[in-house]
Amino acid sequence: MEEVTPQKPKSKLNPQLWSRQKDKKILKILQWFGAGLIILILLSASIIVIKDEILYMVGYYDDYGYEDEYYEDDYGYEEDYATSFSEMDCNVAGIEFLGTLVTYISNENLDEAGYPLVDEVSSQEIAVGIRDAETSNNIKAIILEIDSYGGYPVAAEEVANALRKAKKPTVVFIREGAVSAAYWAATGADTIFASRNSDIGSIGVTMSYLDYSDQNQAEGIKYISLSSAKYKDSGDPDRPLTAEEEELFMRDVNILHENFVKVVSDYRGLDIEKVREIADGSTVLGQTALELGLIDKIGGFYDVKDYLGEMLGEEVEVCW
Image (tube, rainbow, N blue to C red):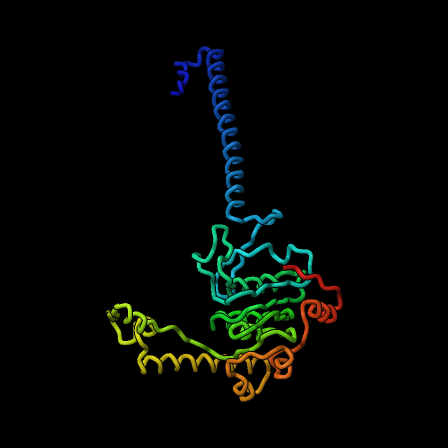
C-alpha cells in the first residue's frame, strides 16, 4: 500500500492545524514501528524453532539435550565431539578405541546421522577426546579402552603421541586385542592393562594385496598400462608386481617396521635389540606380554578403576 504523507501547511499561521497534522504523522510512524517490531519478534522466534529442529535432525543435540561442542586438535582439525567431559559428573575420562584405526572416517562410511557404517575409529576423534579431557578441570586421569586388530601407521603414531603428550595420567586397558597399529597407539600410555587372554603385539608391517592377473587372463581381460611414470601403477592388482616394484615396497615396509620397533623401545623403555627379537609380527597373550614388558599389569576395567583410585586417593567415577 502506498503511504500518503500529509501535506505540510503553507504557513504556521494556524498552529492548531499544524499540531494535528504533526500528531497524525507521529502516530502513523509509531504504528509502523510497532508492526515492524512484532514481525521481527515473530520472525526471530520462527528462526530459532527451525534452527533447533534442524539441529535435532542432524544430531547436534543428543537424547539428553546436551549440545555437542567443537574442539580443535593439535593437527588443526575441528571435530564435533560429544558433550565435553567438563560438563559431566566424573573425575576420569573414558575414551573408546574400537575397530580398525584410521586417521579419519570417510563421509561415505557414515550414515545420515553421522554414525559410522564400518568398524572403524579415527585417530582424529581419539586425539580430540584426549585434548578435551586435558582441558576439563574435573578430569584427573584418562582411560583409553582398546579392542582393535590394527590399522594404519600414521593414525597409530597420532594416538601414541596424543597419549604421550597428555599431562594427566593415562591408562590403556586392552580387551580382546591391541594388535599391530593398535598396540603402537597403546605404547603412548603411562600404564597398560590387559587380560591374560588378550591378543597383544604383532609388531610388524604388511603391505600385501591380491593379484588378479591370472584370473583376468583366464577371463580374457587384458591389462593396458597408460601411466605417465614407471612406478605410477605399482601395486595394481590387475597385473603382476615386477621385481623392482617389490623391492620399492619392501623398502618402505622395512622403514615402517623399524619405526614401529623404535617407538616400542622408546615408549616402553625396552632395549631395542630385545624388541627386534620379538618383532616378528606374531601376537602373544597377556601373561607373556607382561613378561616381555609389552604391558604393565594384568587386569580389566575394574582393576583399572582400583589402580586409579589408589593413585588419585579418591573414588573413581568414569564417564564415556
